[in-house]
Amino acid sequence: MFLLFSDNEQMNFQINRALMSVLSEPALPSQTDENARTLADQNARTLAEITAAASKITDMESWSATWWAAAEKARTEQRFKHAAAYYRMAEFYLPDTSVRKEECLQSA
Image 1 (tube, rainbow, N blue to C red):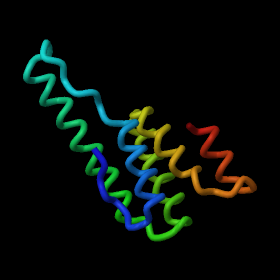
Image 2: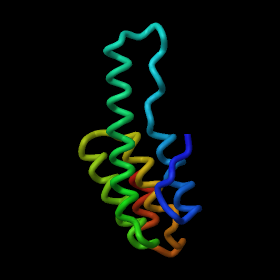
Image 3: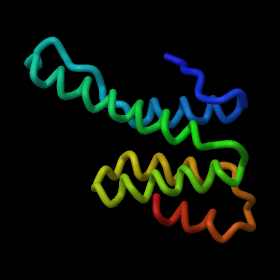
């Protein structure tokens, strides 16, 4: 699955990469219908969250700020896998000299 989130090809690739890292695995045939629905609901919420974040990105500065905010929200909700992925996204385009880059890496 590859979705179009941005006209910027590189950013779009990175957003898809983050999406794949946080989606839940599909339900196995041995799992109940309720478990399958729960996983599907979690994935739908994740996709909505990433789509909402991606819609706020207009440049490199908003890229970092948007993913930082998403990471902080996920962390406060104790969704640590999501938080780590979003901190990584926030860090991705920052210059090596950026103080925020180290904060992202430490937080992830």
